[in-house]
Image (cartoon, rainbow, N blue to C red; front, side, top):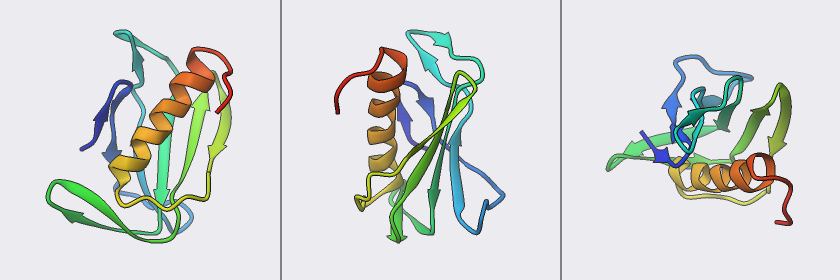
Amino acid sequence: MAKTSIGELKLSPVKENGRFVFFNDLITINGKVSKGDNVKIFVDAYQAAGGKFKILSGTPSALLTVRGQEHVHNDGTSYATVEDYYTVVTEAYKNHFYFGKKEA
């Protein structure tokens, strides 16, 4: 699966609200685990192709749980793969939540 600086994304065997779920429930920053923080990415349809997960339809969205609070990330942009979107969500997590609020 996709790996970024905050950890590895995995595919959940269970759908939520009719959407497929990719998740990272073990977020690490600078080698330290951010307990309780997690990322869930929701897509309507995907296809595994060449080691990546191609998004077939719809716009992905993400739910970030940071220090017990849930934050929705949905920029309305279409992405080709789950990995591309996970990279964007990773940067949002690091820049906005972990290292302090910064302008996008």
